Length: 181
Image (tube, rainbow, N blue to C red; front, top):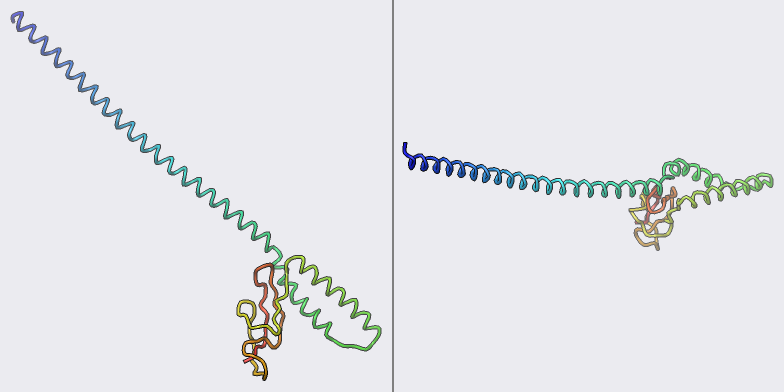
């Protein structure tokens, strides 16, 4: 092999080696670009997941706060429902008329206890539903009877058969009423 051929062969080998290196660098650069791109996509996905988790946490916090407020606001509901029949019985007992002086003192004492009992219920937010003589309201009243009465417009409450009560802004027990036809 002549020197010229040897030089050409070396040059070809050298150029081949350079091309291999350039190709290797290009492939490495493309791999790096792909890796960077995939990592950026993953970061974007993780940011989105974080934002959703944060929003879910905030919504849960708001819901739990609202539920706690409602539980606090209406905590007396079960107790009030158990006490209302006692109020009804006390009211019926006070309707009894007597002339006996001894019993009158007991009635006055009983009336004081009854009023104090109503005062405690009032402080807890329990209010009587005013129904007698008012137009029938299906949201707060339940009609058990209808009666035709001269001089009374249709749909007016004639008599309250059982008092109804509200706890703050919710119905505790509807009023049971007799309504005019």
